[in-house]
Image 1 (cartoon, one colour):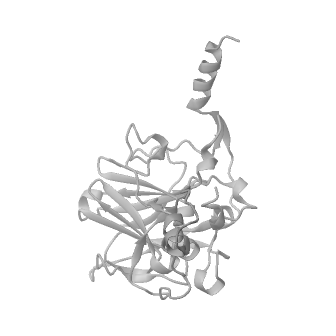
Image 2: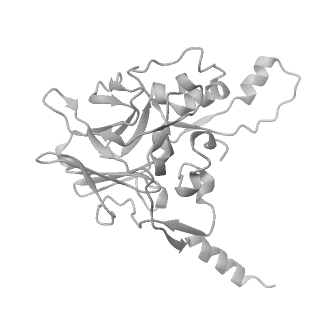
Image 3: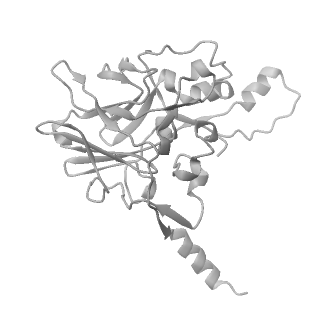
Length: 295
């Protein structure tokens, strides 16, 4: 899609499923490497990796061609407001969130916040892809005139730019034309809880004493997850350049000082998947419609 293509390696996107790009969901037939559904259970996970464990709480993860999946076992032993920091790049990040005052063992680039039935993922101000690439189109501000430091203690909402189809006559001032042609953005980092209406769009679900989450690769600034490639520092390279990594760090448990400890999730470089094809529900809908037509 026009508003996500800047963020990925277009020569490699055929090898993974970018669920942040609308067009990747088109069609009547699709392919999956596993049949995991976001329902709050680990029973349908193809594999799991234990990241953290205490007497009462455990944090597990696995990943596939769509994204990273997390499972928190023992959420009743955690505070009402759950925070999960994620360290992706070594080039930026913060060890404290200026708003929530949460502190992290490593400089975090993303922060998952869950409060009751509301959940979202935030991005470190310096690692905000929308700011560097589309700030001018949205707010008419040059993103390079002034930009966040590598350890700025603030997180931003993750947003995605929207198309502006406004038609306006030219007999306006330059400022009026700018205002009319500015793009809007919507919150793509607002996570969707599993429900009958959400369907496959669900990002998280509770069940008994567990919590399951799915985070799309592109939302974590991965440009090519098959080769573990992420975005490098935007303000050093003036755009999206790729950087290969071998692991990311996540955490949920606090130590005695109230700091969230973070542990490694290794990433396999050049990971391959075996896919199974299946027909979507839309196939049967189209089939039934065409079968009822009188030719």
